[in-house]
Image 1 (cartoon, protein in one colour):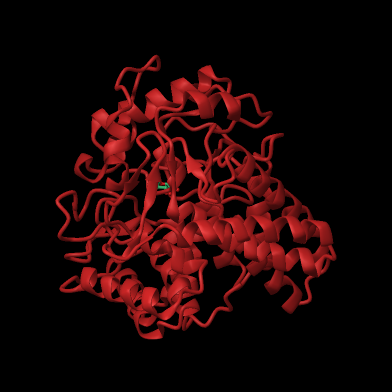
Image 2 (tube, helix red, strand yellow):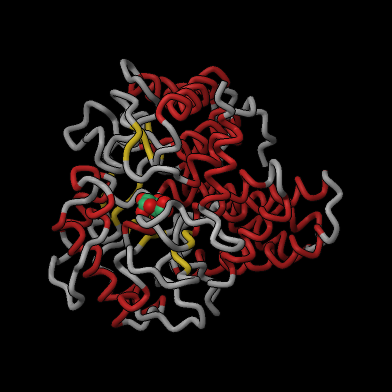
Length: 428
Ligand code: GLC
């Protein structure tokens, strides 16, 4: 009999490059921000020191202003574009210039709890350093990406969402010019079939944005004024709030009273703002395009992420769950990153339909928090089964279950380690 758990650990070991884990060989040969946070939670179940290490290596890339970049280029590799030279940032270790969803705080709390439970030496000291880094990052989010204190944080590049190619960006991204100063030399389509990857024209827009922000010398205020893409986003704000709850808990444990007050204020602001993004007629939450001032109502997984961080009243909770059930009807694997009836749905192109185990993980946490145990279990079984049948692929086709994108993928392995373990992990 195959020992899938052992295989999952082997995937993580194979992707270890010295205390940090690459998402997968060649396609993503550096340390990615939210990937590492999920990986750390996987490690926390069997190797707590290694879990700490993953987060410690990530904050080597933290900028002086508190931002934790989406990629840390610890060691050179020529199998990825855009590499360090394209970003033109000035941190001592080369990094990208944008960020990614702040799962770090959630991960830190899991790692800290595991360290305390296992009696690991110096747990408090190691956690404290990471806690301070996380708090500085949260301050950055609220200052740099919500200067008007709305409670919703904004993304200036689709890649900051982690859902890089989502139909949620179609309208906002179409406004971004396709001209670039940088020569676009894609490497991704040498590793994975082009039909699974973003279109060329969108890649030019992604790089146009990098050029604009590099010209602003990555200064947050200048970027905010110059940004041709600015989206106040539901998924990222939900993750920030959930991590904010985790950090608040740690602040109490560490006796950091004034931090706790500050975090409470952040959390309150985001909680109120997220709740205001509920649209009863759509039965889901929406993001906001800050350039046009309109709702982004493309039906994607992000619309249900607020469950992760809100305790919803029954009417909203039930409507959201019914909607999730509708989207799931007839699918082989749950939960799709785009509603299957939507014209922009594509079963194999990344973030435009496929199932991601880490998305299930976040949604399961949210469903559990809101008492929807049955739906949570459906999503959990679905992800576990898909992985057992189709391997540790980057993502899965919801119609056929086929594993797509990169293979031997770290966050899919980490998801398996956590989700196959009955899902009874404590919520923060
Ligand atoms: C893709 C995903 C992003 C992820 C990265 C590494 O760019 O869209 O969310 O962090 O791959 O796995």
